Structures are given as C-alpha cells and as structure tokens.
Amino acid sequence: MKDSGSELRVHLTSGAIIRLVVWGAFFWLLYFIRDLVLVVLVSVVIASAVEPAVRWFGRWRLPRTPAVLIVYLLAFALLFSSVPLFFIPVFGDLVEISATLPEKLGALPILTAPGGFFSNLSRLNYFSTFSADVQGALFGLSRGFLTTLSVIFGGFFSFIMIVVISFYLAVQDDGIGNFLRLISPASREKYIIDLWHRSEKKIGRWMQGQLLLGLLVGVIVYLGLTVLHIDYALTLALMAAGFELIPVFGPILASAPAILIGLSDSVARGLLVAGLYLIIQQFENHLLYPLVVRKIVGVPAIAVILSLIIGAKLVGFLGLILAVPAATVLMELLSDFEQRKKIGAAANA
Image 1 (cartoon, rainbow, N blue to C red):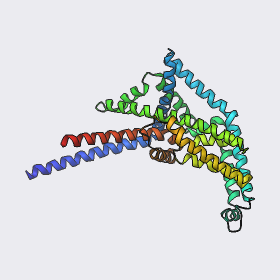
Image 2 (tube, helix red, strand yellow):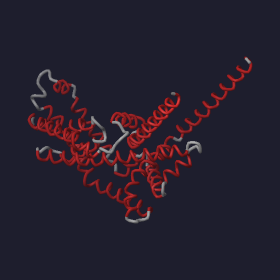
Image 3 (spheres, rainbow, N blue to C red):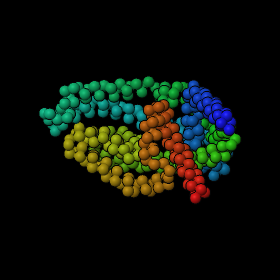
C-alpha cells in the first residue's frame, strides 16, 4: 500500500510538471508574439465597437458588408476632418499655453510672495523647464498625422493590420464569435462565447454612455468658459470631454489647467473658473451620470481606473483601448466564479 501511494505521488508530480511546462511554453509563445496578440485584441475591440452602428443600418435592410464599409468610411472621414477643425487649433493652443502660462503665473504677486510655493519653484527654473518639456513633446507629435497614428498603434504595419482584421471580423455575421470558436477548447467553447457576448453588451453600453457623457460635459464646459471669457475654451472643453473616460478623478484633472489659465488673468477669474467646474461636476454627478450612464452595470469605477493605469503602463495607447474590455471580462469571470461558489456551498449544505 505504501509503494502504491508512493507511485501515485510520483505520477501526480510528473503530471504537474508536464502541465507546468505546457503552460510555460504557452505563455512564452504569447510573449514572443505579443505584438500580434495586441493587434488581434485591439481588432476585436474595434469590431465590437462598430457593431451597434452596423446593426442600426441593418434595421434599414442594408446588407452587412455595405453597412460596415459605410461605418468605416464615416469614421475615417470624421477622423481626418477633425484634424483642421480640432487637432491643429488644439495643438496651437497647447503650445501657446505651455509657453506663456508659466510666465503669467510667475508674475502674480499672490502666487510669488516671498517663501511661497510658486516662488520656490521659480528659483529652481521649474516653469521654464516644464514649458520646454511640454513644447518638445507637442512638437514631437507634429511629424505628420499618419505617422502619429502609426506610432500610436504600434507602427504603420500594425495600424494597417488592425484596420484589416477588425473590418474582416465586423463584416462577418458573428465574426468575433466565429473567431472565439476557432481558438477555444471544445469543452469551454460555449462558456467562452457566452462570456464574450455578455461582456460585449456591457462594454458597448459603457462606451456609448461615456461618449455621450463626454460630449455633454464638453459642450457645457465650452459654453461656461466662453461666458467667462476664458482663453482656449475649445481646447479646455475637449480636455474635459476626454478626461470623462477616467471616473471620479477625470473631472478634477480636467479642471486644473482651466483654473490655472483663469488665475493667470486674475485671482478672481481663477475662482470663478473653479466654481464653474464645481457646479458642472455636481450637475454631472446628480443628473447627467444617473440619466446617461444608468444602464452601465458591472464596470466599477475602481476597476476602470486601475485597468487604464495598468494598460497604459504595460502597452501604452493600445493598453488604454484594451483596458476597459479586459476589466469587463475579468469582472464577468469573477461574477461567474462567485456564482459557482454559492451554488457549490448550497449543494453541500
């Protein structure tokens, strides 16, 4: 009996070693082809993002392929038309802000009183160094729109591959489901596809809600800053809309440059801008967010914040694209695990 037990232990240890080697080889392969994995994952997210628009066109009996083509053409038209309308003016504003704002702030007596915080920073040439760094980063992005896009998406070839793969997945009816069937183990295929469909719905609702919320907040900020005669109102409104992707802390981060610009004119105007952002934040928290994002469930704010930080740290801009979908899938997995745990506990009881 002892020998049999010894043989059993050796057998289990051997099996564990084999599984460890197999999993190690699998993760090494994933790391080796990590660029391709990122391209495929981003393509899946983009194909999922265009799916609601494709379905909307389908209600008008438009075939799927022309519908996807129209969505992609509209997206590229919007992207390229926004360059002269938004990106170039915003780029100019950012360069001007980084060049002039430190000097204006340094000239305010209330901020540069002897022994004050800003006074100490001025002695260390902080403002001039910060201004030079910001301008250098901005000019680094001005090498060309297509070049910048290719850099953001990991190179020109990766950018083309993302467009092609996402278009192919979107054109197919349940293209992502078919892709998951291809790569999933037969024993887990049904669960993996169901998990993705559930996650996809939540991701879509989150994305639609955040885009609408960002648009509303951006418009309100623009109107408020225009009424207060604050410079760079369009740029600050776009920043406010973009920072809406970051729950809780996004509005606070967006208000900081606007308040500084207000302070650069006068302390009173800076306080007015701070009051404006405080009112907008309260309006958003108590009215806009419950109305616009009321359907969002399963994506807690802390999960979004952590996923954005981790994604940006690991793989840059592509990590930001994958952050919320990955967090949503993880939340669904944890929810399923908790459900199975409760069912098991109930069965044992």
